[in-house]
Image 1 (cartoon, rainbow, N blue to C red):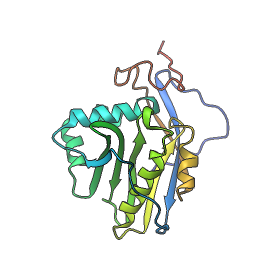
Image 2: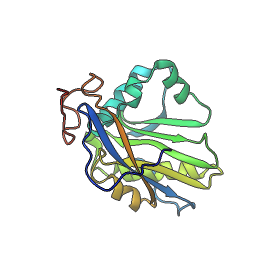
Image 3: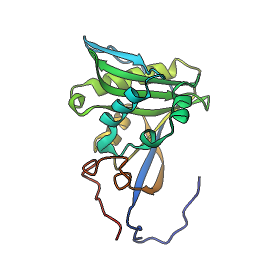
Image 4: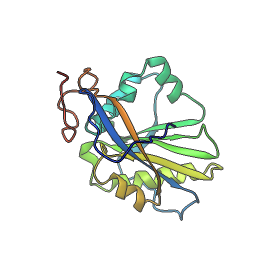
Length: 203
């Protein structure tokens, strides 16, 4: 990970680029068990590696306004290798047969576990499902012989995300800055996605 040694101040980005402030959080001991029962009509199902289109559909549904784009532009072979890896547990949350959420735990760096993806579709936010899904994620992670569960969020995320993670038992430990091309300009996300992030066309 590259460290920045820049004087304090403002820096102008080239047009077409975005800067993202990332907060890393961790949980270093198993918390007390909490209710992890989904409401009636909801189910958590393993992702079908043979249905990448279906996976990307819910990935986009959850993450379009959060600037999630990494797996929309990832080659099929790479995405299938991640989702099918023996040490990655990727799930879709369903209400009936409608996908409404994503949960992914990455155990490749044991005894660390990364909560790699976690989110709900817009219609499910505010229903209490997020708390139950987080309780499920934490319980599933600590069923394994891990010593640390970590996650990262950023200022493109839902405004309540950082507080939600802290209330879930995670503690911030690091800040990072990520610079990347705006995926809306390349057609990887629609131009109306993430309206809270300014869209600036290159000159």
